[in-house]
Length: 377
Image (tube, rainbow, N blue to C red; front, side, top):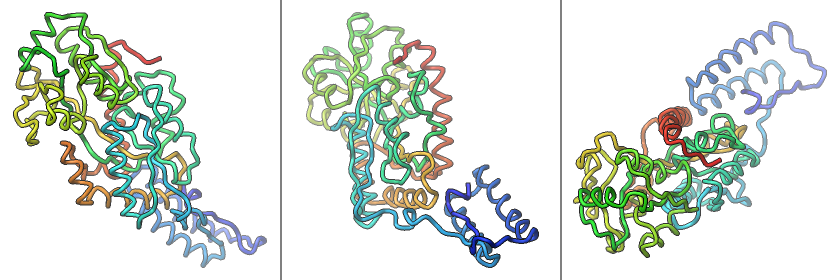
């Protein structure tokens, strides 16, 4: 672990520390490494400890140097890229761009761009980051599918647990069940009756296997004991166009996407997936799924930031600090709240808390997905 942060060499080359010096160095390094592995200290503490070790090494005559690339990060001549595994124009795309702007401000105006890499339910973009250089310039912005794709796609070319450094969660969004504007139903009760009367004919959008829209649709079908025609898209924007045009019947997606369409009276809103009604003026009269009798129906979509495995601890600290500053940015908070999202401020903004949460989400959704028996491969 320490070797990824500092480089140790003997200076001069023929210097041989005494046995007592080596034992002293080992005594300090090993407990630190053990504590780090157990994830009981944060990366900043790790770097502070390494600084102390560097001082000791200097006293012992052992030269220590920090990689220049990490010291100079981020380079003013190189963009940081957020890879987004979905099409432009959707809610996750908007959240990524909002975060890029806020983190840019937190990093002194450094350029952060968003690259859309859709395809294969998002796995193409995720794999691109997993295989990217671990220099801190290529990052992944990903939602709940980071936890569900490992079950939906059984032969992923990457490992969610082992191939990424977790930087922190960003925001959390409730979901909203909406329908085409020509839907004959006008309440959730009427919609349920319409669904029961049209079994096998109803189409519902999803943004690909493992996405929140897919999970919401699966849960709706399981709850109502009705099979629907699940139509996959590469992103929410093209699906919304088809819903407004009447090509598909239903959509369950983030409120960041649905609110503008509800306000424009281009779609009909039927229910939200939160335990309590939302405060948004556009959704305050929309009932929760629990209100209409589905007490266990709860789905939210969250977004997080990741770096390739092996990115230096010094770079990770800078990125995490910029992320935390961004989540306190008034403009960023306002933009998320306008769409019904909640900016995360708890321990999940830390790398350890972020990873623990994703692992728990994997365990939560795996049995649901397996019970549905629908896979992407």
